[in-house]
Amino acid sequence: MIVQAIIPAVIATLLSTSYANVEPPKIGKNASEVCESIEETSAISCLYDEYLTMRFFDVPLSDDLQKHIWNTALDFGIDPLLVYAICEEESLFRANAVSKTNDYGLMQINAINSEWLESHYGITDLLNPYQNIIAGCAILKWTKSFTDGSLDQLLLFYGCGVGRGRELWAQGVTRLTFGDRMLSILEEYRNGGRDR
Image 1 (cartoon, helix red, strand yellow):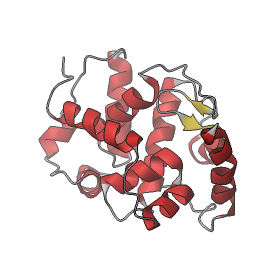
Image 2 (image 1 turned 120 degrees about the horizontal axis):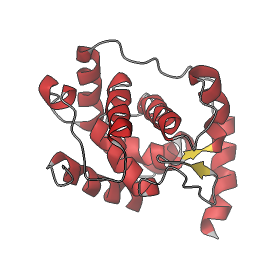
Image 3 (image 1 turned 120 degrees about the vertical axis):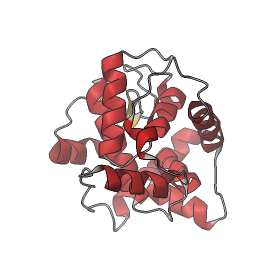
Image 4 (image 1 turned 90 degrees about the vertical axis):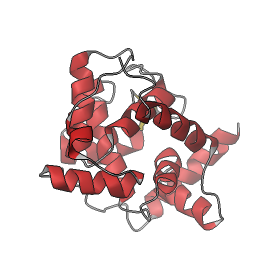
């Protein structure tokens, strides 16, 4: 019930903000840009070998889809391990997951994003796992542009939208339960706990 009351307010905030028409991010061009962007986002040192050597995980995704996640994340300057953590937390790796709040696929992309994702990235099916990963990485990169560079702020803004995230951040809320779980999962990936 609380979620149903909050959603209209979040949507109204998103629609009324001045950044609603901000141009979405462009895909990174080279490895140094990717590593610089990853370092800023997740406060980790980006070693080229660490991120340019793909890792496979013991998760219910094909090798082809895991390659897509890795490459797409790097193209957008996003830590691939963060994308895995989001997929695990948001959908338990179920490409057909649909929430009561109109969130779709692996990364639980809200339908409110459909129009700009289609116009800028050609995404037409949020339940297509390949398109969903592109959508999620685009949203993460776009969201990152509104943060101070902290991973906590990125997760807060990703989880509840930039408008609501800014309000919560201004009130001193730096992390929700979603963020706590996400950081725990991310740490497992970073420490090799999910490697094959």
